[in-house]
Amino acid sequence: MIDSLEVANFRCYESLALHGLRRMNIVVGENASGKTALLESVFLTAGGSPELVLRLRAWRGLGDFGTIPGDRTSYESLWKDLFWGFDQSRTITGQLVGSHANTRAVRIAYQGEPIATLPFTKGGSESPLIVPITFEWKDAKGNISTSEVRITREGLKLGGNVEIVPAYFFSSAILPNPTENAGRFSELSKQGRQEGVIAALKKQFPYIENISIEINAGITMLYASVRHLSQKVPVGMLSAGINKLLSLLLATAEKAQGVILVDEIENGFYHKLMPGVWSALLDSTRRHNTQLFATTHSAECLEAMLPSVKGAEDDFCLIRTERHNGQTKVVLFSGRQLEDAIHQRVDVR
Amino acid sequence: MDDFLNEFTERRLILCEGEQDRAFLRHLIADRSLPPFHIVFPTRPHTTIGGRGAFGQMLSALRLVRGFDDLTGIVVVSDNDEDPEAAFRATVEQITSAHGYSAPREPLVVVRNPGSPPLLVMALPWIGRPGTLETLCLEAAYAQHPGIGVCLDRYVDCAGVAAWSLTKRLKMQMRSILTASCRSDPNTSLVYAWSRPEALIPLGHPCFNQVAEFLAGFDEYVAAR
Image (cartoon, rainbow over all chains, first blue to last red; front, side, top):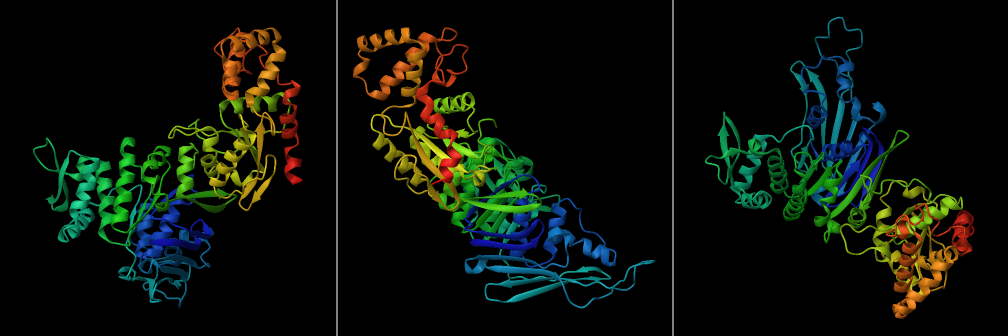
């Protein structure tokens, strides 16, 4: 479990310190107040490769990463919006502190010897020398893994590190990946642990009888056996909400100590299902010792959380991002305060 | 989302027991040109508790309302009922259950805690006096409608209401005098008493002076203690 998060110079956060994180961390706040950036800071710190930044760019709608020209401006534009105030002379730091496996830090800065990649861009007027951006992760044992991002003739060269905190990011814009889900289900199935996930799904959707791995047009994916249907149906075809809940349950179950990051958790769920979704997620994160960070804009979604919070106040906290005069402020409230506020119809968003 | 408490629009806050108290305080503040207060009371959509019994939950919840950190003071307004000391103790229990607030020794004593605005308890009808908001409102209504008051006293006697507890008797009298004096809507309640065309409960009556004067000098009172 991650108990605290400290971030500096990352996106809208010049400085952020959050202590007292819980198993279920609910993030609220207005648009452009830093909710997604908060999830991203956890994702990046927990991770182990600069490639994560390219994924975040795609999830933010900046398009898939293609060929990059070898000039400095193009290179730096890939990373510029990671830095607070777009000030690339700063050093980004992130630190997660918690149980041993979840303690980890990241440091991102332009450093090292300037390098040039041949051939130069035709007619380029600026220096071809690029100071590479370096990502440095440190685990709880003090082991450091460094990845310098270089442009080569084949494209970007990104290093990586295998010892990471398992973190799963569910962007609001991207649908669950069927092959990833099938892979997670397969891993659980090999260990005989898939039944818990199926049971949790059936509890919310009683007409689902079973889940299995099948191949559809060459793609491995999950199918559902549904009562009164003569054939199994791809889960993605059945319902976006079912697909999403199954994806979340698989992610929470796959690896202990994992962190599930969900942007706009309410998307895809019928409002009457939300109490059951919260209950299933709390149950699954407890059982598998994983942790959830979820953003929401929905009052219904928050209200639906009440039955799960009641009696489990210590498992919840509310994190509200606020923006005042260009500065981002983050406030953390306890599960008990969250419960009281929902009871008293306080708009906590 | 009109029924949600979104943001404090004023820097002073009153937490009262219910909708009637809020209506009274709102109209008193407007009528006497008192400084503005944001007035809230506990709601009960998810719970059976409300009124004073939910002060603790409400005080805890209020921290999540935007603008809480900018509040300059909180007044907890509570009825004395039959026993002012017991009522005050019950209010203090609620305040301390909310965490982050110390227990005031007695009504009108200001308590200060880091991270919380100054807080005090104001009792109705006033400090040490048994009764409720209706005690004050009845005094003003009787003065406004003396003829109905005479009839009401007889009604209380002959209906055996005099044997009821003080708070129950006050509610019966309040409802009765409003019904008898509000020709436009005999079904009106204390919540709407100041929204009717008739002058049912004149807020200029001297019985309201202690409450009004306290609210008028609230900033100075808190600053001096």
